[in-house]
Image 1 (tube, rainbow, N blue to C red):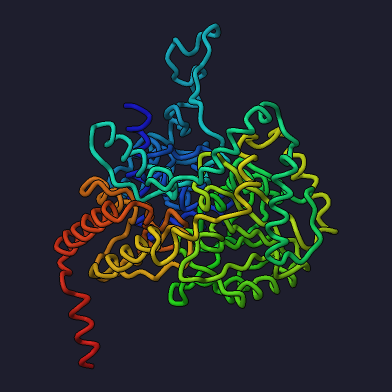
Image 2: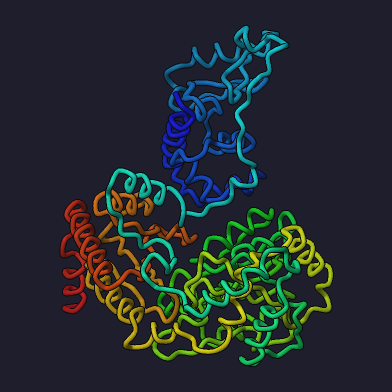
Length: 559
């Protein structure tokens, strides 16, 4: 069998055992972490889906929690033992004691390569592998650090969609906030200025970026009311905000440190925290309050290990815009607990209904605020990778951390230099995004149509986003009693050729949401909504819940 086939078989056994124990993937991940073998829900999910094999260092703890043998998990063996005793899979205990006794007598040790007898000096290996002149081939696996890293936006669903496209099928992609494929063009003056400066872009720039671009970033926030004294040395240009997020987590977090991240989140934040050796602790945003952060939940999750709090405003994936009152409450918590505020404001110029965005750096100079932004969304040049990070507020205690950022910026030499020349042009002058989000604009109309169509589907409800390109519809689990939202999205992809990302891919804690990207033009978006409506109608027939929501509403009204 191939490694992929082995992984899928492992995954089926793991899934069956977990469910037999009555555990969710989240509960199993928590139990493993508490037992000293840190694992995430995403890692458990990847093992069960057969995307990755079970990590050897996690295997003993996993087997112990599930009350089975390591050999059973890996290869379906009925028994495998430690150096002193056999651990028998629960299904074999009553009916196959002879297997366990035989395994114990031979003192079998479970390994990735097979069950081998420790009494045999050759370990029962083939003769070709005991020849000292021949190297023993070992499976080359990814680092254990990546087991807790998950990024489902470009995960299994996209891989399946890519395969389907290669077979000639047309997929409607509502999975990624990439404006260019949907005909949303970059401002021509930006393209022209980048082209004119190409002769100046041949060599490396300063590791933090070219002066004119960093000065333009600084002046942008000064114009919005920046409170603290900041100069160009406090601005770092990066290959998009993504690179700067990873750099920040590497500079900030030690093993075991925690950072508070909204739930749902943009999953790169969680992945970057886990990759740095820390832990992402998710605080809840309230759907009933148009997805505003739950301040009491944030308070309950601050510990002596908490280093900072991430604020994504406007939010991805919900499209929520946070009130100034909520932002000030978060600032007060950061002051009380000496937390770093990481303000992801990449959608600050993608706003609807004449609302106003307030940068966190304009509300305080009493805590360290890291502000992240860029041109990928507002100026439709995602491929240029033009982003920045600005430090403001209280910095006198953060000299060593800042030195770490400087070191990491130097190690990558510099950000993409041609794209840096887009920043000064983009920060001033006419902001074309306003035309797209006004009442007569394309994005405004696409948002309105998407929300109207989604709310018209029985058992689906959606709040109105005030920013970004996304909405985060809710699935009524009484109407659609699903347990695996990725499986649901995979069915949608295969049945209706529509690609979207499930809610748990954004670290939401229940299989009852999904994200819709409303960047496609009205014709394509209407087509996608037709397919979505047809898919959910089919699911209601499968579940026998057609009309359930309407019936329940009628009963409530009569009561």
